[in-house]
Amino acid sequence: MERSDVSRRDLLRRAGWMAAGAAGGSMATSASASSLAERGFSAPGALDVRDFGAVGDGKKDDTGAFRAAVAAAAEQGGNLVAVPRGDYLLEGTLEVPDDVVLEGVWRGPTIGTQSRGSAIHTTWGEGKADAEPFIVLRRNATLSGLTIFHPKQVRKSPPVPYPWTVRGNGDNCTLRNVLMVNPYQAVDFGTLPAGRHYINGLYAQALYRGLFIDQCYDVGRVENVHFWPFFEVWQTDLKQFTEREGIAFVIGRTDWEYMTNCFCIGYRVGFHFVKTKAGTPNVVLTQCGSDIGPTAVRVSASMDHAGISFSNGQFMATVEVEPEARGPVKFTSCGFWPVPETGPQAVLQGSSHVTFTGCHFSGWDQKNAGVPCIDVRSGGVTVSGCEFMAEGKAQIEIGKSVEAAVVVGNRFRGAQRVTNHAGSRAQIGLNVADAKPRARRKS
Image (cartoon, rainbow, N blue to C red):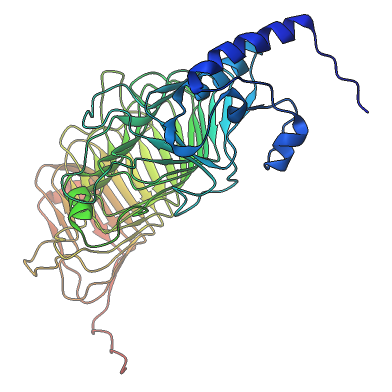
């Protein structure tokens, strides 16, 4: 047998944890490695919320037990707190202290697990969107392998407001493999500084707001985020609320933000880049997309020297660069297609220079009102190596207030229809237009 060294100080600490755990309804003991292994956890020395009084029956309030468990882990100098299979009702808030991991059984994002695996049911903040967040992650804290469910949320419009489900407060906060079934507001890594945050495997049907990032003064990383109807399917009053009011990603001041494989569907705005008191966004996005919504990307602000860059993205439907935007905005190898109300697929204002390289556009001007695919009203634009697939429709209109425009090396299905009101400030050439419409295949 391996030797077990347990000091008197350890025993006294455990006695203190037991007292704290009484608020959760039972006496606490440290979890043995063998008992946790039986429950699917392999971290030696990890703690177990059940040993601090958590029941996991979906009826008894386990808030006190969770608080006691994470406090004990912090007292040890940082540890993992295991959340075995169960439905844990938390009626209060929870702060995960510095250097503590709260981890359930899941090793990847899930669906339909509000009563399976490690599920946390929260009723905190019902009807109060501005209340304190349900969970706060402090420096180096991690939330992993869990499902979070609001059992009192309703499937109608408007839904019940709730505060942010998770907020970061300190550098190096982490979310991994978490399903938030039906949050009103999902993740806030912006109200308080949370630099070098890391998100990987966040799935949610965020009804009003999905992910807010701001005050990130060192590189943040966000991967594999999927905002999708995990709670309510198409087409219902609740989903129509999100289509009218919802914003999936709101991004303010970031000193570099790397985003990869981030997706949303059915929001009024997919990606919204904003100026806050802290500053403006600098974001690089790869393989990200916004589906079935009128505004896929809205740029209200972009960091002057760094800007925003999308590559290999797909968007349904429109990009809006607003009058206050100044920094560069780039789209490389991206695809754009419409929803029924789509007019232009890009409306460009402000003083930003917006670049489209190797992109394709289809189905704009759904109401046949004669509007262009790219409506350039001010600032600058470069359109190069792109394909415009809607035959017989205007491709680009360059307004008289545009400072610079380069339209070179593109393919236009049907006749070229590029209107230039900027005179010599626009250079247009080496584009290819199909003289004849494409023959349609017989079905």
